[in-house]
Figure: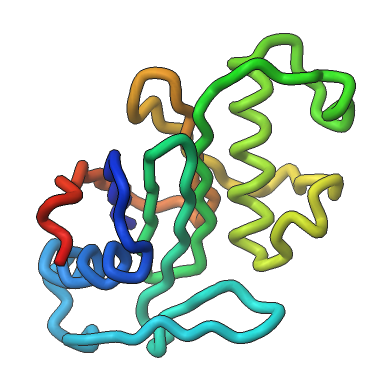
Length: 161
């Protein structure tokens, strides 16, 4: 699995396709298609037009996080901020740090399953695998996917065509 991060304004589709080309080069798998398209179907999360690579994207506070993997993946990044704990009482947290750790787990899980935020208050199974990342100061990032090696790259937004 490879994670890509960027700070700044980027076109999401261009970012995904730009990073897919890097993913293909970085993992050295020549069997992956040289080019992919992003497919969007109502009621489903966006996906590539191949089953050999999966992606998921998250935005928050001027930062974009993208995960690409050989297996389904869910990612979430959140800019930390004050929280009205009463509004989110279904998340048992005593600090903003703990809240965002649990929130990013929840959102990455729902993106991994494809359910999205419509299932926001569902129970997260004990077997779900999460990896947390302190990417940039003031942000919390999390990945939900099968356990695998993870590499992360910071992409200069001006490099994206």
